[in-house]
Image 1 (tube, rainbow, N blue to C red):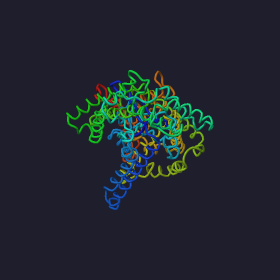
Image 2: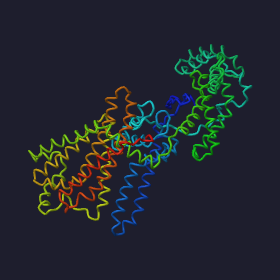
Image 3: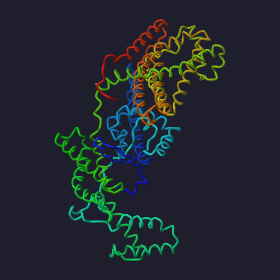
Image 4: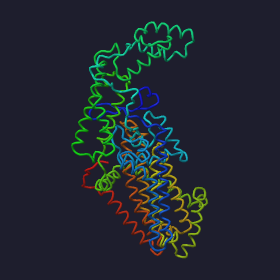
Length: 595
């Protein structure tokens, strides 16, 4: 087990339980998190390979069902890429297969179980942590600089990654004494606190002293302390080192010093008295972590809770008696209480009704509440679009400076397509399901990037909104200049209301994240990130729903060449009405669950 002497190599975070007892979590290090990530990457890659191999026999077949099957494969690949971490952390209470194998868990600040919302925030912001180029450079730098090992996603979600392996007691350095309370209650260390501090300073500095000075100090200290341990023989230096090791080991086990009185001396009797039930609880905890509380009988759960409360009382008494000293007994008991706390205060499982309530009550309510950041995002999207539209109308050559060459050439070809009464792009025909799935996954990915860019003080969000607005306006201006604006409008309007609204809503989520950093108000930036991150993920959930519908329309309805512009405008009007109804879906309803 990790001893207190390793605190320079490990990071800890203190958590106060509802029982008003403070314990420490061990923060997961970069190495263990990297090991877990490699395992998860391997599993994700394996799932993708199995999916691809399994799809081959179906892809060789012909028929009307083939495009639908390919569309499903595209959606499954998307789910593996974006949903792997969110689903596992949400369903396995903060653990992915990799984290479970390495012994790590994601918990919320305060030691509470992670929610789906918090998991979604930390894993969508992963896009920024991955930079540059998938190296995880940003995330590693953030975790190294953070006192609690947080990457940017953890800051936004209010989470930490902790080590959660069972604490085992080494037989060579027992945390609790082997004898009974009566035998050890009278035991003390060999030195007073001042004497131990003096010897500690000598041992720490001895290598930096010249030989003569070291021998002089060693002789003086040996004369002073030799009678404390007459069984130790050897040179002065050897005697002092052996005495120091004995003293350090005894104090680590909780043995009181010669000068200790009252509470400081009480710690040893607490350890001796509680040793048996601590070991019993360690066994109960390991069983509960393996089976889960839901699989335990009512009697087993009651016994577990009762013993947990006993341990929280022991920990409070032991911490007082230790007087702030780092001893193995406090470390050991703290780990047991941390494991019990995380198990007992886990959130209940997400049900289908709770998910439906989240989408139909909390999401619409948040969209209305966040009207200001969504409106600002809309201005950042449509404002540059209007400017470039006008600029291209006045001088079409400027379009080539900021539009992809493929878009410029398509606008030129559009003149001939309009003369032939063809659509903006060829009708997908039987491939509509595949095209719809590709469109919706691409657009959802774009909105996730827009959202994640908020953690960079909003710069990523602003860039994504402005660049998309510039391209949208430039294309519209180019088509209008060529006299074929109805051609592109007939393609855009069926899905455009929902798609552009979704982008603005996602942009509002990114700006909420940015506002927590720039304008936190009465809260600290860390508090504001958690609160507004929770709000922002509701906006992302709403934008995802809209983009699924918009992608379906873009794949199945928008390319139809024989529908007139007026018919497609009717579809657009219907989507606008549906959007208004969705935003007001929660009116008169009350949420019964919290995200």
